Image 1 (cartoon, rainbow, N blue to C red):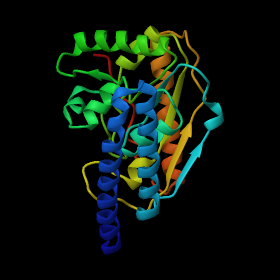
Image 2: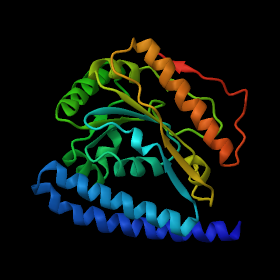
Image 3: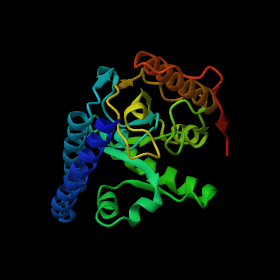
Image 4: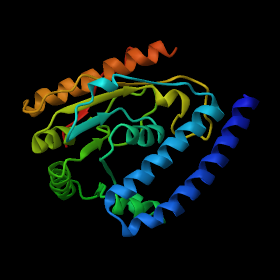
Length: 253
């Protein structure tokens, strides 16, 4: 445990120094096209992930990259930590995240998100927010961008029962593009609600795309089941035994 604490402290120091450098450097992109901001975002993500792997000792493996289709696509990923918000940027050069509006209030970072044409959602005004979000997402897809969403809406603890929101099915129906489900084990190395980081394997798998045009209910069930079953498989491979009692749940609000 003392070594884990030391590694975690060193990573946090290096991470925030790295963030400060790239957030200041990216200010030049305010006067450039949005693609320039995404270049800075990927550089920040790549360097942050490098620091995390080297300092904490968390081995990373990406699988199924060849399954990622070209062009606009919806990406639905398991969400355990901040790690995957950075990692996915490396595989989707025109990434557009659906994110909580509160992030836009953060100095520099929030302004960069606006310049990068990310899509905020106000979770306090759910019905109106969903309509606005779907409209902005459709504009992004029409521009050839990739739409990234965490269907559970927030980070989950490893082993917690899944809690997928039905809004992802409505978005899928609105966009009319394939969906790439993503399973991963990032929560083993970067758990939520703790400052500690562990030298545990991070396995990420891009799964077989779900074709466009399915009934939203069929899509929702398939997406949820394929992410959960493959996440549990990866967790077991990484040495974690998922609880068999943690069955799927859903929220159709």
